[in-house]
Image (cartoon, rainbow, N blue to C red; front, side, top):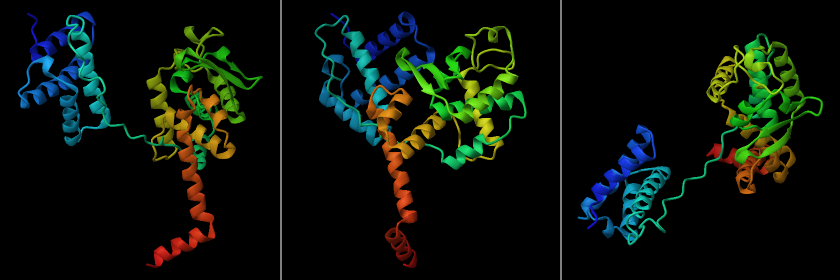
Length: 309
């Protein structure tokens, strides 16, 4: 007769993902932590048999995790770990139903992306290129803001992807989809300045070599780009943390603010679904509300009355 003990089943599963699937020790530790929470909850209900778990009990577990102040993302991960456990068990137990089917975690709150105001972008970018590092870092920041590139697209770009005559860059986005994005004048100027300094190491010699390289001529890593942007912002006295996605958000929100063309912004960002782009309409509304409060006579009167109170 098959062993139906929950704790034993969890141990077998953890051994499987570590030995057979080759999961890292860190990943296995995370799975163990999630599933230990399940075992602990079941023990309070005197359940140690995997066949006795059902959707109703798991919904109670989700509610308990929520009361324990776990985030929606964390609860989703706990459910995912449990779902993976039952998927593993089903390989040898065809009679075993998956109790996670139909059980949903609380929705993760949809937060608006942080962005930069145009004057903050100017504070970051309006500086002379005094050194090779400065020229490269400014070119990176200008291109991220001008073309709205993802970090992976920027570090993956090669010299022959940039067409300075046509003023476009070709990048490979999510799902290996290629798109051509316009590059603005300031970014082209910054890129031309970077080309004067660009080192010509072994990896940097070919026409299809990396667009952005280290001082040794090696392709820059994502972490290196993030670090250089952070240092660039600090150098120019910015208090807000600047990373590649912040500049991508600034590109999208400023473009939508001035054009109102959601479809065009979707194409430029490389979003497969316009719903992903629609979050920027909230940013645009925030801007409009701010302008209203600052400029509309009735808003100003209302603000004055509130102050007088």
